[in-house]
Amino acid sequence: AQSFNGLGQFIGPLIGGTLFFSASQSAGDGDQSAVKMTYVAIAALVLLIALLFSRTRLPAIREEEKPVHGVIAQGL
Image (cartoon, rainbow, N blue to C red):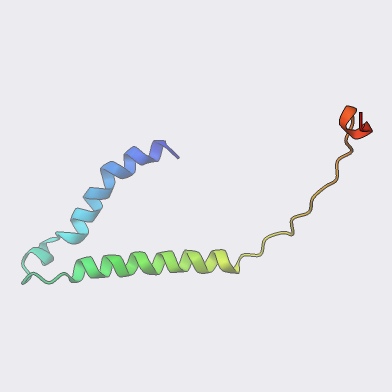
């Protein structure tokens, strides 16, 4: 996972610059619709992931009793 941090640090600004400062946005009148839509898309993705986590069934947690050996088990 740590090897992708550097990759994301390098590629992230390139993708963000492409989304925020594309040719169609630079000719605009200062409208921030590209920034708004990017954050709406990120929020939708986060909500979708949260929904998937909330709907995932997890197995029941059972504690297994392990026999204790040694001095502590004998009370000495």
